[in-house]
Length: 582
Image 1 (tube, rainbow, N blue to C red):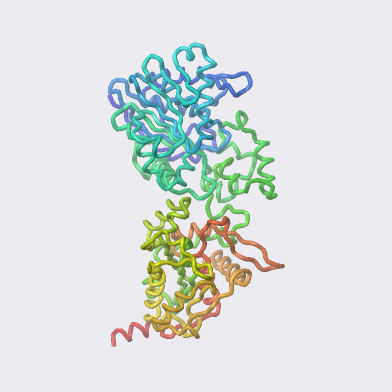
Image 2: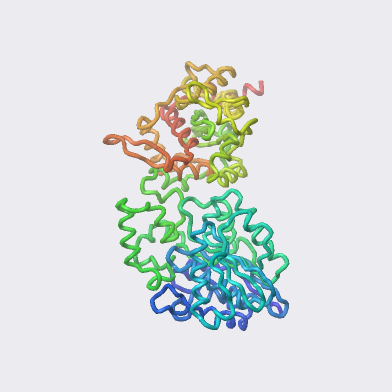
């Protein structure tokens, strides 16, 4: 009889704080779980003093996870009822060693002749982190050494009886192409999230599970050193949804060691007494005093970066709120969302609108921001959009998955180049030139600005604020569409001269008198920005990394500068509607 179960864990917030298991059910097939656990517990961890076994060195949470994986196998039907697993856990909790133990156990328990088992790592170094302990487990046990053959130069362990092979490989398309692995473990999934081709690669690597019904795929990962994206974000969202019961998928089980939202809101993760929440191995492979000392260094700016430390060692997801030098408005950004805001809504709800434009280099985004002052409430309503040329997808492989996500959201428009090798042509002033028509993004911006202008909602003077660098094409297009460059277009000084807009908008977000559409585009840009002091009281918004994109946010500050002048529309919206009826 097939058991009935759910992999949802709706009370996970209570469980994780109380140090209870995050797996809300007993193994579906206890005999299978016990047999596999006996093998797993007997394996030696050779890089620990005394070379203890997993049974001697591990806490119960490890055994619960192993039991859930192997205990989901139905021997009668030769199929595994739960086939997809995710372990999200802080660094230094023996993740790669546990991965090695799980896959050696699978190799021993496997009954299929010539089966393929695969540990897929994003780099050679990560691959070694799993292969070395796996090889050590075999060599330290005479019985296993007689049963399994370790081939170091191929990072391969072969079962002498069944011919099954456990391969540990650094991922690339050629390596995983054509694989028929029945058992797959993917280490450091967050790194795969940065690869544009990772989804196809993982689909290829796990293709063997379609015919081998006893197989499984296990994802192991810490949090990313930047905002989650790509396949990592996809899987993280899926397993969170399963855990929270918003997605029904009993064939997936996630064990996610992360702080409950309430603890994140009050920064409870900074207290040493709470380090255990995302470090279930605390006191074993990782220690509270070490985390506390390292955290103190990061707060002083003496380490690798506070955000990265929190993500890696406390499993705190990087977002808009965690950067030490973040824009002060970032903390209040998520609390000021109004998903109803669109261009049409601005026109309907606002008494006046101003615009800001920024960016537009071939490997930049061209950002447009509209800010409208709402009738009655006088709140500022913010809408932003961006355009990017196709060459960005070639030059910036590290953000391709994020760009594709923004296109799917509708907040980014991709503009195709006739020749993506355009960057090889440089004109006399150092700018890039070519034969392609490079005005598609500009035309997109102007089309929206014309719509607002024709609605009569722009002020007579200072309607559109632009970064003075690289705006010639935009000015030309606006002029050709009837805009007065002398009165309606305004050059906005950048750098520290934007201090008023930077600080003022943060204050309005905190007071919730400034609302925005809550797009992933702006969430990303806000997270990419940091604030640097200039002089005694001025600040400048700059990129958090050389390749980060913040152009739409800069466009917003340009628009804020104009809106602070308390403009009045040429024609209010009621008059505009009356004129249309006439």
